[in-house]
Amino acid sequence: MTRVSTTGNYQSALLNLMAAQQQQENASNRVATRKVATDLTGFGRSAETLTGLKGAESRVQGFLDTGEVVIARLATQDLALNQIADALTAVREAVGGVLASDSATTLMLDIGGQFQNVANGLNARHQGGYLFAGADTANAPVLVGSLGDLAAAGSVAATLNNDSIKPVSRVAENTSVETGYLADGFTFIEDDGVTESHIFQIFRDIRAYNDNPATGPLTGKPTPAQKAWLTDQLSRIDAAVKSTVDIASRNGSLQKRMEQINASHEAQKLSLNELVAERTDADLAQAVTDLELSQVAVQASAQVVSQLREVSLLNYLR
Image 1 (cartoon, rainbow, N blue to C red):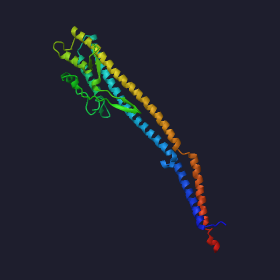
Image 2 (cartoon, one colour):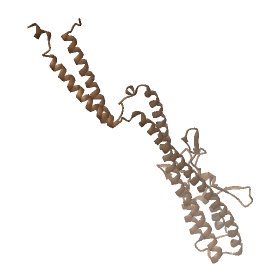
Image 3 (cartoon, rainbow, N blue to C red):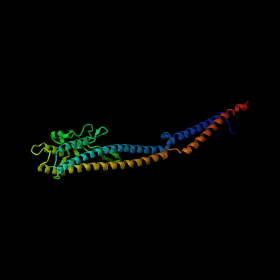
Image 4 (tube, rainbow, N blue to C red):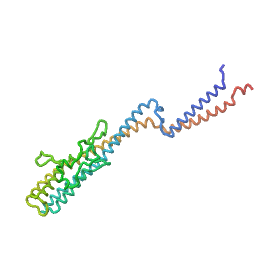
């Protein structure tokens, strides 16, 4: 004979009610958050895998953020490099104009203006720091702002203040790229094919030639000797333009490479997001169904508890 206990019935019914309420809460959370669980404990054995996926996703996002900063820097560098190249091209046009028109009336004025453009380009800034100063981004790499200041300096080297550390960025796993240039690195090879000179040397030599009483000034109609000397400067200017354009080309190639790396990281991040979603996103239709069933179960359990009030053995004893 099976013994029936009123207390046992109540306990069993209450346990069923509590279980139904827990199921209802779980289903409600899935519907509200659209996630299988709200913490790693709720994912059970998948928790370790999710931790690894989230870690990988975080690293990829870090590389993406770095890539965006590098791309912005390269874009600003591109503007500065083009400004320098355009200024050197304008110097060549000014010298060529003197030879073509047989008049040097505005030559030194043009040269002075273009030198300021070159100096401003080398002193270009990005996010508050000087682009071509190396690691010392707080101080301008070019200490002179006019052709007169350049001529008064002891040497070209004395006008440059950058350090020797080029910026390097880690843009991917085991991949670091050199993303900057130094102001004293804007050089060209002289006509002898050996000597390397800074682009400032051209401006300094033109100013020195103009200021030398034995050769200058470069005003009015140039003498045959002046025309011959200016003709020689054209090849030097061409070499300086080519060197600067080469730097700008490398910068552009690096910018394109960074865009490709970031695109790869975007695809990798999307793939990781999908893998995480497969393990964390709840089946909304199933969650709604479970919520409705759990609500019915709660109501049924509550009704059973209510009915047990009338099914006490004490009622039969009376």
